Image (cartoon, rainbow, N blue to C red; front, side, top):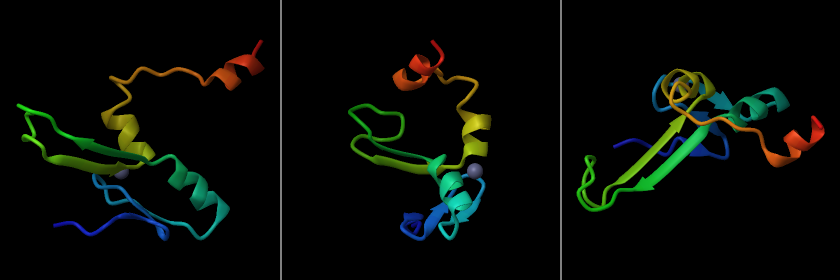
Length: 83
Ligand SMILES: [Zn+2]
């Protein structure tokens, strides 16, 4: 069983092990780019009925694993700045 890796002291990527300690503004910025997924699996899930999927990913792993398949868009306020 894993320990909690998403806490007030920093974040650790569950895939590559990248650890970011929240000891500077730069590291806080890096930590903000982590994605945390928590999903309760439903009936007939390939993962398992009612199991909970929980994962933290760093920006590098997100880029490698998810970006090829993700739908990327700009937030409304950012789109308004470009007009
Ligand atoms: Zn990673």
